[in-house]
Amino acid sequence: MARLAGCPVFDPSGDRLGRVRDVVVVYRSSGSPRVIGLVCEIPGRRQVFLSIGRITSIATGQVITTGLINVRRFQPRAGEVRVMAEMIGRRVEFVDGTGTAVIEDVAIEPNRLGEWSVGQLFLRKPKTSASPFAKGPTTSATWAEVREQRRPGEAQSAEQLAQSLADLKPADLANTLLDLPEARLIEVAEELSDERLADALEEMPEEDQVRILERLGDERAANILDSMDPDDAADVLAELPQQRLEELLGLMEPDEAEDVRMLLRYGPDTAGGLMTSEPIILPADATIAEALALIRRHELHPALAASVFVTLPPYETPTGRFLGAVHFQRMLRYPPHERIGAILDDTLEPLLVTAPGAEAARRLASYDLVSMPVVDAAHRLVGAVTVDDVLDYLLPDDWRSQDANDERITAPPETGTISLPPGGAR
Image 1 (spheres, rainbow, N blue to C red):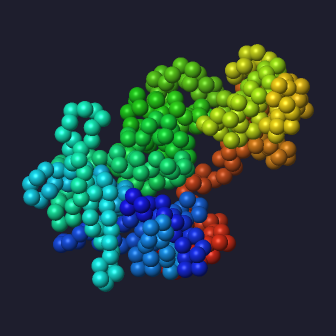
Image 2: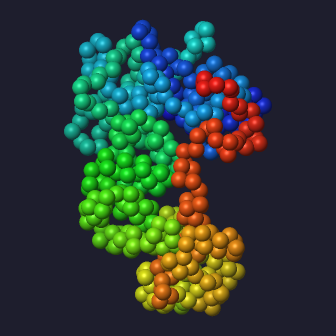
Image 3: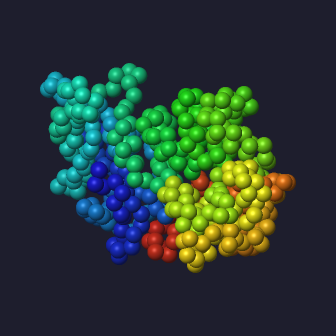
């Protein structure tokens, strides 16, 4: 499974349909679990079920299908178990009484009739050294040689699953987490770093963000809010009762909490409610080389990296008087030692913090921009509205989870072999 997860899925003509995210199995009264299909991610980050009967080849680096995929969003049924999401990390004990181990990987294999089932298990035994860096020995076993060990109240290990999700983009990680059973979701969330979980939460609807944060405890929730962009943290906190909101703000880092408090003062449908309070701000005598060094930071959102805003001191929001902006393409046309004040665009009219969201959308579209400065009544820069903020505002509240039957969701031309069979059957 470690090699199968993420493999591309192709139709017979070689067109790529999506990628493998998981394998679905069902337990049997005797013998190893039977594979009934794959969970595949198709364009639009939708996870769908692909029956094993529609798969013509499973090989290293690729899966080939008959070309027909039901694009209804995958929902696990009773008795179905996902290998990556639920089986990896489970504790088993050897039937010969030689001890216990944790499942780290699972092999699936076909029999003579072409039926796929769980074959070998890759297991890690408890470590024998007291060193914190030591790991237990590994071994392989068949399904018949082990039995699952689930003590009452014992949670499954989620460390292996969290590691398997390490390379996913934040939006893909968010979708994967939301597709997990509730208990498993929280286990995996607890294994993720604050920064990684914060990135994923920013891609979820507010109600899911609140639900997950409430399950993680006050200290962890505050740490994650510290790691989120201030505007996203403000959106989450705005969904909470006032008392709970103040409790979490009190646990956050003072500087981060202050940024969030400022954003909470503005209406959610205004430029102030949509903006981020952390754009790139420089004095007029800074050089182009200094500005380019700032926008190269890998953690910076691309829309924020498109422009540098120039103000009088102080250079943290709310700044001194806003002077203008310099787009990065303009900086590339001048020598590195040039002062950004010399190439300043002072014709860009900033948005007032009280401007409606519709005005922000109109201005971005009219001037072909990906970000716009936002100022207060004193013409001090207080933040920037980016195109992704405006898209979130314009799209319907449930745009992240549109039903597969929504006619607005269609497969792109290169996936024309995807079809939806009649009825609700997989």
